[in-house]
Length: 222
Image (tube, rainbow, N blue to C red; front, side):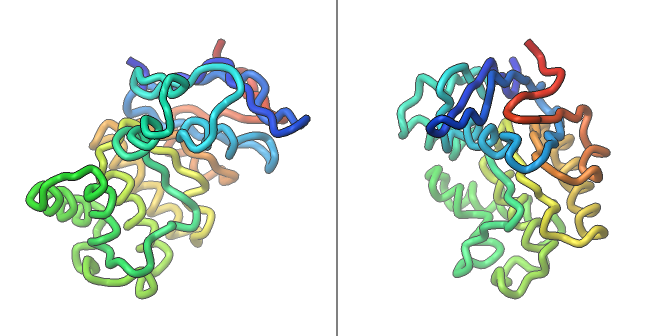
């Protein structure tokens, strides 16, 4: 079963055609970089895959679940249980500690305190922040905040991670460390990853690099 299957997806806003029949797939554990200029449709595609937006035509399946057949509650469940997003600007909850930020999506899933504690402690250790578990977001560096965001994304044990410019707000050295972390965690947990980026750095951790232009995926799969 594919981790992600996108077939002939289109999306328009008014008279502007943003996605023009995009098709792609990811295998479990596969990392793919998606590059292209601003306005090429990358973010719109990511929003459709993440269930934030709905395509006009075409189909999207995540681990065999067709998003088109789901109502809003169903899409929320997919975002809570199957797909996670890592953002350029971290999007940590400012009033919660490192530990509480990582734990938050597990509270939404209704896991027991014992299960949450074990999973959160393990993830914080994996991203190298056990010594900062009580820190608040404003006390962290950019690299530390992104590590928290990655741990939070992993907390739900997703099948797919969507990473939107994950190194775009970091200096080069920190960005390289975050890429290495993403690669190692993807391999360890067997999670597929689609990384939208302008940075050629990202391609080194990815099996394939795809390019979008004017709403089309160049050399795309049929």
